[in-house]
Length: 436
Length: 147
Image (cartoon, rainbow over all chains, first blue to last red; front, side):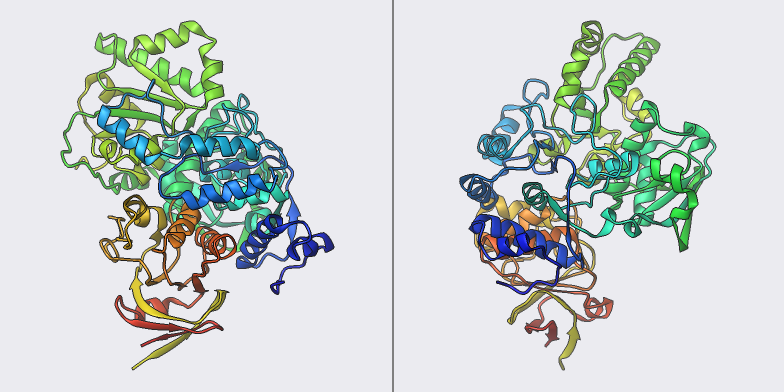
C-alpha cells in the first residue's frame, strides 16, 4: 500500500489494502490523493446527493466511459440518486442546420452510452439534466450546513452562498467518486476557516446593478477568494425571496465563471452573513468598491469576438445558468411589452430560453402562458447553450446572450437585458460590449 | 548555465524533456479539444486565447504553468489525452496545484497507470526563468533543473 499523509479510519485502510475489491481501492485512492493535494487531514461524510458536471458523451474521452464501465461492472453506485448538468442537444426546440446536426452527432457520439452509464450509477431520473438542480421542481435541494460533493461551478456557488451548504468546486469525476464513497476530503469551503471572506466588496451604485455584470466584476477582482458584499440589501431588501434568489443565482454564476468564486456572503441577505455579519471577514481583508463608473468600465472591457460587429444575430440564448420558472414568466412579460411597444407580434431573432426539464414541465402546465411564449416566436429548451457553442459550425454564427458565463466561454456577445429585448424585437444590434 | 528550483511533489518521478511555457492559466479543455477530435499523435494547442502556447505541440512535453483554468471537466480531459498517448510528460506549477489539474493527474495515475510527474509551488521566479524549448530534468523529490 502507498504511504498516505491523511488520517485514515480502519475501514479506509482496509479499502486501500484492497480488502473491498480493486475498484473500491482505486476510488478511495483517487479521493485520498486528491485531498492530499490540498492538505486535507481526513475524509468527512457527505449529507446530500451529488451533482455531476459531466453530462455529455464527448468523442475522444472514451477513457472516461471505459472507467464508468469499470465502476458499473464492480457493482458500485452513488449513495443517493444524483443530478447532472444539461444535455448538449435538443433539435426539436433549438433549430440546427443539417451540417450542424451532423457535427453534433460526431462531437457527442457517446451520448447514449454515457446516459445509460449514468442511469446505472444512480442518476435520479431522465429529467435530472440541469445546472440548476437546486430548483424546487428538480429536487436536489440541499439544506444549510450539509456537506456536498458538487462540481458545476454555478451550482456550487449557489449551494454555498444562498443555501449555506458546504462544497468545494470539486473536479469532474472526482465528485462522482466521492458520491460513491459518501465522503469528501476536508479542506477549503467545507471548513469554517475556508468560508471566511478575504474581500469586502462595497456596492455603491445608483440603482441595482445588472446581476451578471456585478458578478463578473467581483469574479475578475477576487478570483477564487471569498467576498463579503455590502450595499445590495438597499435594493433587494433583507433576507431571501424568490426574486433575490434569482438575482444571486445569476450574479454567482458570473462570479464563478469570470473568476473562480465558490462562495460569497451578502450582508443582511445570505444565511451566514445574517448570522455572523462582518465577523466573517479575515483581519487583513482587502476592499473593492463598485460604483456606476466601475460597472461601465467592466462592460466595456468585454472583448467582442464577432467578425462583423453589425451582423444580424442568428440566435439569442437566455438562461445560462438555467432560468427559474419565475424568470421564464418575467421574460415573457418583458418581450410581450417590448413587442407591443414596437407594434409587432413576433421577435425578429431566434430566441431560446433555457431551463431545467422539470421547470419546463411545470411551466407548461400553464397552457396559456406557454402558448403566449410560442406565439411570440420564443423557444424553450433544456440544453446547455455552452455545449451548443462548442460546435464550430454554431460558434461561427453571431450569437447574442445576457449571460456572462456564456460570453466568457464562447464567441457569444453579451448585452444587458434591455439591449437584448431591443435586438430580438428589432433585429438590429445596438449597444453592448465593444460598442465604442 | 543550468538553474535549479525546488517545489512540492504531487506525483513523483524522474523525467527529462522539452518545456512548453504558459504564463497565463492553462485552459485544459480549450487547449486539447481539437486534438481529442483528431486522434493523431500530436496535441496541437487549440486555445486561441493563449498566445504563449496556441499552435504548439503539447504531446510529450513538460508543461510549465501557473495553474489550470476553465471547465471543471478539465481533469477528465487531461486523463483522456494522457491515455491517448498525447498528454504531457510532466506538469510544473509555479503556484499551488488547482483542483482540475489535481483530478486529471490523479485519475491518470490511479485508473490508467499513466504517470504525469507533477511538482507544484515552484514559485514565480521559476516561470519567469523558464522558456519554451528548453531541456528540463525533474528529479524524484521535487527538484527541477532547467538546462
